[in-house]
Length: 171
Image (cartoon, rainbow, N blue to C red; front, side, top):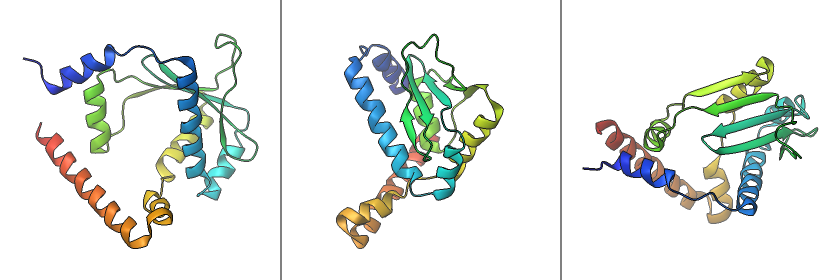
């Protein structure tokens, strides 16, 4: 009998590789979101600006994303002609391979297991960003639907998240 985690692992392992244009567009959207979040934190932008030109490679299974810091403190997709010759300053590779277990960890608020290689100072800056910068989703939502509606939506989402955590903890 297949369990739900087996189903997810099997499903994701059988997905075909998306076309290059879709991957590139996905990377651009991720960078737009990250920059939006960074712009809400001036100290974060200052820290990123100090790392200008440095390349961080994020990897999980066959998926990779190379980011570089810009002089103004934002991120950009690292333009690389050939991955073999590009100097990667920091590699952050999620080593959890089971999709269901990884999802369970993330929903519960746990961090995935990560292999870190490269510049220690850059790794410390990335860690600081991960711990101290967060998306004010309720604030962004309020600009679209108003404060009261955004507050109700956010409360509902927090309730759903708490119930989902409880359900996963029982599994």
